[in-house]
Length: 408
Image (cartoon, rainbow, N blue to C red; front, side, top):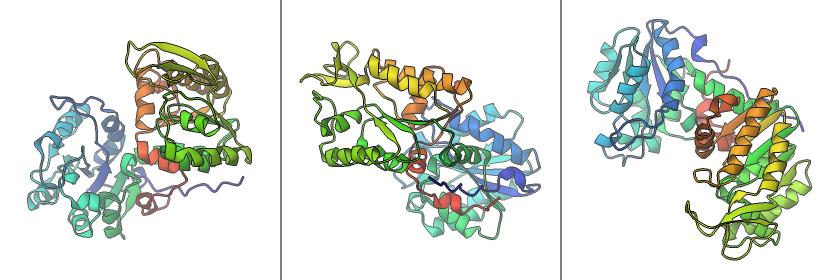
C-alpha cells in the first residue's frame, strides 16, 4: 500500500524570535492532588524545551493552556493555572516566570503581557474559564491573538480539538509566523511518520474497554500493519461476535455486528487480527477476588480481566520481533494484581524490541500510565502526551490546528 507522508511544519527553532512575543499554546492539563499539588508533571516538563528556545534567543513567551473541566462561567479557584506557574518556575529557575492578572482575555492580562520583559515567561489564566475557548469563538480568539507576534502550537494533547486557542487564533494570525513547538513536532514525527514510514514487521497492540473507541483506528490500520493484537475488555465484544463464551465480561452489545465486520475485513486484508485465546478472570474487579484461568470459553459468572499466559506468550513474541510497534490501550486491568501481568509483559516486550532497534510508539492516557507504573517509559521510543489526539491520528484524521501552521 502506498502511503503519503504528511507535510512537516516549520518549528519554533526555525524562526527569529528576538524581541518578539511568542503566543504559545501548551497543554498544561495535568492531574492535581487534593492540595493542588501536581501529580504528574510530564506535560509541563516536555514543554520546557520550546519555552527555553524562545527566551534564550531574546523572545518573550506568552503561555496559554486549559486545566481540568471548568464550567466556562468564570474563574474557579481549584483550577487556576497559578499552581502550574509555581511548578514551571521550579523547573526553570533561570527564567522569570509570572502569572498574568485577571482573566486571560482581560485588559489587565493584556497590559501585563505588553509590559513583560524581553526573555521572560508569562502565563495566562485557564482558557476554559471563558466558554469561548471550547466553543471556538472568533471574538475570544481575537482577544488572544492580539497578545502575540508569533503563534506556536505546542499542545499535541488538544491538537484534535477546534478550541479557539487551537484554530481561531492561528486563523486570525494569518500573515504572522505560525509554527509548531518542539513537542508537537516530535509527536507528529513519531505518530505520523510511524504510519507513513513503518518498517515491517509492523505490530499494533490495541486494548482498552470499548470497541467503539478503537473501531476507526482498527479500520484505518488494516492493510497498513502486519498484525493487530487485541486485548483489554474490548476483546470480549469480538469474542462474543464469533460465538465464544465470555461469561460476565464487558461486552458492547450494540457493537457486535461492527466487530464481526471488522474480523471479516481483516481476513480479506493483508493484516492478521489476533484475539486472546485464554483469559485470566475474576468474579469482580477487586484485589481479593477469586481468580481463574480459562482457555477459549469463559464460564458464566467470571469476567475476563487480563489476557491469559498463552496469549501473552504469543503477543509478546510478535512484539519482540517487530521493527515497528504502535500500542494504544492496556490489555488488562493493569492497576491491580494479578490482572496487570499481560500489560506488564507487553511493556517489557516493547522495551526489548526498542533495544533491538525497533521504533515503539505508545499512545493513550492509560497506556502512558501503565508504562510509567512499570518503570519502562524511558525504554521505548516515544510515549505520547495526547490520548484522544494520538488515537485520532491512528484513525487517519487530519487536524485543522496543525494544517494552519506554516509548512517547513
